Every structure is written in C-alpha cells, then in structure tokens.
Amino acid sequence: MTPRRALVIGGSLGGLVAAQLLRSTGWDAVVFERNDEELASRGVGLGTHPQLIAILKRAGVAFDATMGITPPRGVCLDRNGKIILEQPMARTLSGWSRLYRALLDVLPAGAYRLGKKLTRVVQDTDGVTAIFADGTSEPGDLLVGADGVRSTVRAQFLPDVQPGYAGYVAWRAVLDEADVPRDLWREMVELYAFCLPEGEQCISYPVPGRDNDTAVGRRAYNIVWYRPTDREALEDICTDAGGCYHANGIPPPLIRDEVIARVKADAEAILAPQVAAIFARTAPFFQPIYDLISPRLVFGRVALAGDAAFVARPHAGAGTTKAALDAACLADSLRAAGGDLGAGLAHYERMQEPFGRALVELNRQEGAYLSAQLKRKAERSAAELHRDIGAVLHAHIARSDQVGDLVAAHGLSALAGA
Ligand SMILES: Cc1cc2nc3c(=O)[nH]c(=O)nc-3n(C[C@H](O)[C@H](O)[C@H](O)COP(=O)(O)OP(=O)(O)OC[C@H]3O[C@@H](n4cnc5c(N)ncnc54)[C@H](O)[C@@H]3O)c2cc1C
Image 1 (cartoon, rainbow, N blue to C red):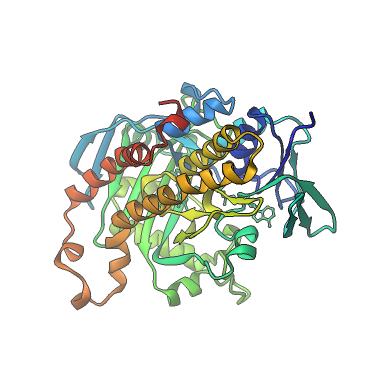
Image 2 (image 1 turned 45 degrees about the vertical axis):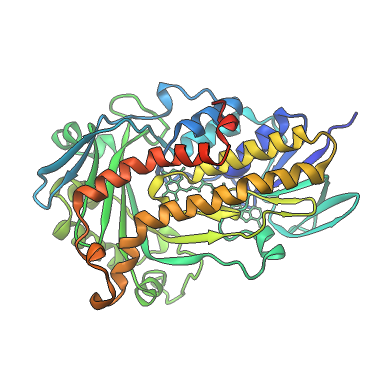
C-alpha cells in the first residue's frame, strides 16, 4: 500500500520533529521551508525539558552529553556582580542549531525541500494541495502548518487570530568562549545567572558553541534580557537606518548602530558587570515577545502545530518542548485512528488545544510584572512594583517543573515515554 503523504509547512524545529515522527508511524512526510538555504543559526541557546529530550529520542536523535551544558547553580547577581541569592538547579541548555542539525541529519534526503514558500492551501474530500510562491504545487493527504508565529496556514483559516504584543522585547546575545575573558568565563560557566534591575529580567548561561560544540574552549555564553518597550519605542528600534519600518521584526544586521550603542550603555549601567562585559563584546539583536492562542487547530485535512498554533512567552523555555509534544500527539493520534484521518485529527485537537492554552497562561504569569511596567505607577499593584527578587528566581526555576506538571495534568506524559 502506498503510504499516505503529509505536507509539513515550515522547516524549523517544530516541522522537523513532526515530519520525523510522522515518518516513523508510516507516513511519507515531506518538509517545505520557504528559505532558500538551510536555516542559519544565530547561535542562540535553547532551554530543554525532559519531555523534549525524550521526544527527540523517539525522532531518532540521541540526546547525549554533547548536546547541552548543565550549569549546577542558579544565582542572582546584584548591580555590583555579587551573588545575592543562590539555588541548586539542573537545567540542560542546548542550542537551537544543535537540535536543528541533529533533526535534519535523521531526515532522508529529499524529505526537506528548501525555497518552498507556501501561499495557499486547497482541499477537498480526496486530498489537500499546497500551493507555493514559485508556481508549483504538491498534493497530500494531510497538511501540517508548522510555519511559526506569522503562519500563512493559520492566516488562511483563522484570519482574525493575531499575535498579541506582550509589551516587552528579549534582547539576545551570544559570545564564543574564546572571546570571553578567561577569569570571567571560569566564573560564569558554572552559573545560570539572573540580573534583575527594577522591572527587567536578564538571564545568562553557557551553551554549546558555534559548531554546536560542548568541548572546553569551544562553548559560548548566552544572554536573554527582557526589557519593557512600549509600541512607540518598538517601532523606533524596528526601523532601519534607511527609515524603513520592519513591522514583523527587523533582521539583526539592520538594527541601527545607535540602538545597539544605547542598549550596551544600559547594560553597563544596570546589569552586573560580568554580564555587561560579555554583552559589550557581542552583536545583540532583539525579539518582541508575543502571546498567541488559536481557538482551533484542525481545519479538514489541515492541522496547526508549534508556534503556528500557540506562542507562549519564552520564560519557561518550553516552546520547542510544546512543538515536540504537538508533533508526538499528532503522530500518535493518527496512528491510533488507523485510516480515519478525521478521528485522528479530532483527537489531536482535543489534547493539544487545552495544553497550549495552559502553557500560554503559565508563561504569562511570569511575564506579568514585565508587561506591567508600561502601565502608569498608579495602575500597578504593589506586588508588581516591588516584586521580590527571590520570588522571581524561585518562580523561574519552579516554572520548569510546572511544565512537567502541566504535561501530566493534560494526559500527555505517554508522548514522552513516561
Ligand atoms: C527570546 C526567545 C527565547 C526562546 N527560548 C526558548 C527556549 O529556551 N526553549 C524552547 O524550547 N523554546 C524557546 N523559544 C521558542 C522556540 O523558538 C519556538 O517555540 C520553537 O522553536 C517552535 O518553533 P516552530 O518550529 O513552531 O516555529 P519557527 O521556529 O518559527 O519556524 C517556522 C518555520 O516556518 C517557516 N515558514 C514560515 N512561513 C512559511 C511559509 N509560508 N512557507 C514555508 N515555510 C514557512 C519559517 O521560515 C521557519 O523556518 C524561544 C523563543 C524566543 C522568542
């Protein structure tokens, strides 16, 4: 019997896991990515969860010690660089490109097609067709929209569902171990470090290096700095030197020099000197933070997955874990339903819609005090104004466990083999 064909739109982590797991359950799954070249890494770090690691294993990726770094201490550094709070922790930090490369390596040649920008989906009772910007089309039995926060697939079926700006951006920066002054590296490689200037949150930690290397001397240091930014300021920093405004995110090389100079000056003024010294040596870029909730995930033969379906703020570092859970649930639901595609997709939606919604809410809680900074002081609650540093640190570390609790509460533990 010819295997059923799945068209997976979007060739980032969510699409790759979905394609691989569908293939492992008998589908002929092919990924279509709009970019002409394999996706470039900005070397950014990526927090993992046990569920992600388990699902990667299901997808054929052996997650071993070379895939990540586990700093043993969670600390909060004050403005002078002194440790003012400390808590043991065991979170494995990997890198986006480390996982991308590993997933790409397990897909057979020909199952990952570049330069394929989806423009439209057409479907009837017999099948679904993906129409691409290059004038070609591809037939299939199922189409998975894993095309991210600005999903073309979602826009076609849920045109009114838009990402909501959370009121803050994440400045991100990464520096090769070799470029971090030696003493500083020795100190920081041990740490998952917070700096908490009033109303802001900066987290930094070691990650695999440029060539996805975790060997000594070849790692990197990663910084994520959440900064309240109102819409006017966001518009300003999304405008390039030629005056062009990039509404859906400015490419990092186009961020104006003066914007970079300003954020580096702010780092020096308000972050711990160790973190500011690393930040000063980087080419930082930023990502606006969004929430997105899709009320439905399935439209006939079409299913949304990963960030196309829900975007949770990144505080629990669970976006990729959620994309992997979506992929595993989709593959398992379809397998359990045998030839009944409709029943399989209905089961997928029943499981993943409430989970996605709950994950968005969990991350909103941590980001609430960052969003609140844009309100007038009188509107902010005492808790938001004087948020206790210890509470932020403990809540952040606990958030990681809460992701596992949420997975269990929504009956999804079996997807990760638990
Ligand atoms: C600041 C920040 C920090 C984060 N940190 C973490 C972390 O520590 N841990 C974690 O798990 N997650 C983290 N995330 C979230 C994580 O990046 C995503 O949730 C996760 O990678 C799932 O992405 P995805 O594959 O669904 O979508 P994306 O990665 O957005 O990929 C979508 C893909 O679809 C392609 N595409 C788009 N439109 C089309 C089209 N029309 N046709 C064809 N292809 C198309 C795009 O080019 C892209 O390759 C973070 C996010 C942010 C913003």
